[in-house]
Structure formats: structure tokens, C-alpha cells
Length: 296
Image (cartoon, rainbow, N blue to C red):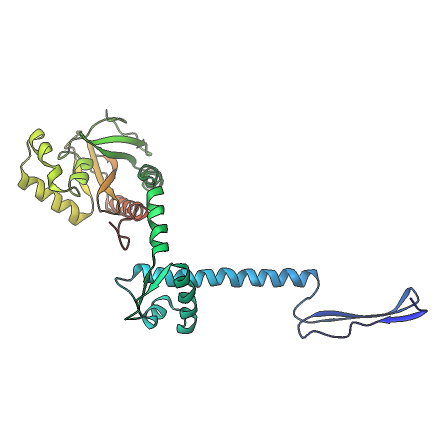
């Protein structure tokens, strides 16, 4: 180094943090700093990375909006309709669709030019359905129902011999009953049984009609009332002094894979309880693929 050497960083970036420094010998004689809105040192790099990350997350969100619009549509959509449904500008929407099409998540009809869900996204949906465990989904719904309503919740699944209790969650008020895990429930005289048979094809009814001495006309009326209300209810029919409401969890085929029942002392079940039950079972059914586009 010469006796006097000046280091000058005077190229000031339009959005930067710069410094100019003159050094005489080994001692700095002048140090000046200028600051812009954007920093170029370590802090600036961190801010730049954060902004890039936010842009990346936002772009994922935009892409998902486009896929969700396709998922909820009744049929394939034109670019204009898809852009409107996803609230994404047409030019941006087209760029995303080009990438999705190349990756196999979207397909475009060569004649109409309309877009629809591709094989890759259908495969992903089927994989998610295969991994969805109805019992775990139903037990989680039971837990939430007990927390929200304070009622006792019972979970039943279908067996060759009819509905069988496989789960029980006690609410705030003890319920006097001899029902327990493993108990079989009647088909037409319990809220759980009614919730099951109302969503099963009539071919499943025959042997239960004979066993429980119920006519096909009565069973059809019961099934119609259950499907209209969205839940089944009994009050003292199975166990004196107890009321129960029940609703099914439906799979992608619309078949009942489980039924959740709320129990309370007679006449204590209210409209709020039935509303919570319907909401919980509908949400659980959606997790199992019911109502999804392309359901089996």
C-alpha cells in the first residue's frame, strides 16, 4: 500500500447502502455513509430473501386459487371463465395454466380450448382418499362435538350384523345407559341405526326388516324424514329417559362408513346440538371425499 491510498465506493446503487472511505496510511481520514430504502449489506440481503420468499408463497396461493376454481366447477372452463372464477388476471392465469398443463395437473381440450383437471391432480386426490382413515376422522369429529356441545358422543360403524359401537366420549352430564363399545344397535329403533339405513341401498334392508318386524313402507318414510332433516332422532325409543340424534359420515360413493350420535337426557337435545352435529359430519364426510368432483 502506498503512503496515501484512497478507497472510494462512490457507485451508489439506486436502492442501496453505500459508504465512501478515504484512508491515509493506515488511518481513515473520512468516512461518510448514505442510506437508501434498501440495504445492500447482510441486512439488505436478508430483506431481499424475505421479499423473494413472500413472492414465492403468494405465487403458490395464486396457483392454488386456479386449481380450486377448476375443482369446484361443474365442467371444464375457458381461460376467461377460469380467470374470473379464480380472480386472477387472464395473462397471469394463462402462464400458470401453461405450467400446470406441462406438469400434468391441468389438461386443455384441443378443440374447445377449455381447461380441466389433469391426471396428476386426480392421482393425488385418489391417494389422499386412500390414506383417509374414516375411524380417525370420525373420532376427531366426536372430540370436537363433545367440546362444542358438552353432550356425550357415540361412534358406530357398519358390520355384517348392523351398527356396532366402536367409540364413546362422555360429555359434561353423565348418561345412564348400558350401551358400551361393542354393543350392537337396532336398525330401525335407534337414531344410529336410522342414520345408517337411510343412506344405504334398500337391498341392505331386507333381513333387518324381518328381524325387527318393520315394513318397507315404514322404513321408507323414516329414511325420507332422516334425509330431509340431515339427521335421525329418537327420544326414549331405545332407552327410556334418553334422547339421541345421529348423522352419518359419507364416503366418496355416498355410502355411510360411520355414524356419530349425540346423547342427552330426554328432551334436552336442542336445535344448536343438531346444527353442530350436521356441520361436524358434513366436514368429516368432505375429508373422506364426499361431494368432491369426480367422486366415485
